[in-house]
Image 1 (spheres, rainbow, N blue to C red):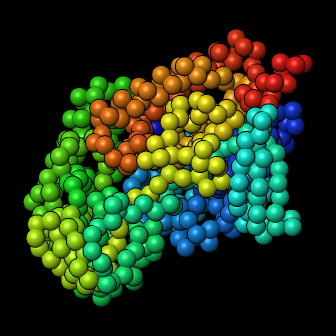
Image 2 (image 1 turned 60 degrees about the horizontal axis):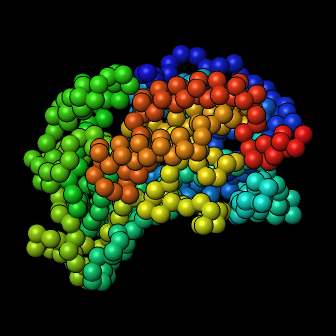
Image 3 (image 1 turned 45 degrees about the vertical axis):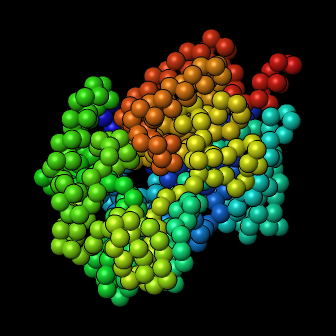
Length: 473
């Protein structure tokens, strides 16, 4: 499978599809990239649902200064996947290169309006608590200006979780020894180069946001430093003027061929050791990719000064493990995020160490009736994968798909974990990693298998409360 969407969108709608009250009622949490496509799938399947977004607009992480308070968007943010690779299947992204954040925001708004979804969203409504009841249904408490009286409590058959995983800041753990006299910021709070202007900036972290912040600092800061604890392979986003993610890499290719393609892209992009960065201790493709068209050039020009890991904070100075010290007045920690669900009791659903064991990154093997959309880290864009997850959940709630047994799901999760351990170095960054095309191909196969199971079982509605009703009917 090679997922690349071009062409014309599906016909527009003028109003939402009327739900079928005989189907299970769902709660959808969040109206970002995952929430909007999940809600569309439920609406098209006529599944009744309530949909809450704690901010005043759609787009989630792609809305600069989003009033919901959880967006990590900054003014210079450009997608790391091109338009055709991030598009929903029936609504092509207009930009065939790498869109800027405002283009993604406009795209999501256009998608919501094209499919008449906006009136289904309750904005300014925060899901504060979701409690599982003894009969397998769910009780949700929602608060905010968007709900009558500022608060409501309502029961659901199913919960579709789309609250994202780039908002709960992860800081260095354990903290670096010593005290720092300057300003400390997490990358989540970075909004643009004006925050770096005239400063002596140290960026910590080798992911995509870390490279972007270091690049921005190189143009406006008094001094820009980039500290890496371990080396990363950096791939240029465009090779020969073409987005690198549009080079065909089908799921059926053998692993050695895919690795060869990655190595080719790495060699064409540059050698990080020649610009002062540490040599990675892993092969390319064995960590989440870091993409940047400019960081090599800024490092080569010494506009960004590479530094190793921090050893100690010394007031207005920072000491590094190579013994060097630099005067710093702003540290930006681009050290990632924790996966968390503030509306669930931790004893029910949590992700210690960012590990959340799900079947096909969607279904919890031990808690039926709760489904997750977008909780994966693909080698590619999340949007097409979230779209499939939404359709998959809708198929389950309408009886057109049946899950395999708990034992089969656990075995699949075990195999996925073994794959992670073989391929990636141990890090909280890699607990949800998936291969974009392989995941889509396997999801398609499993949906076909599950459709056959559903027909064999008589197309049961896939939530505990409806199963109990059927058993007593």
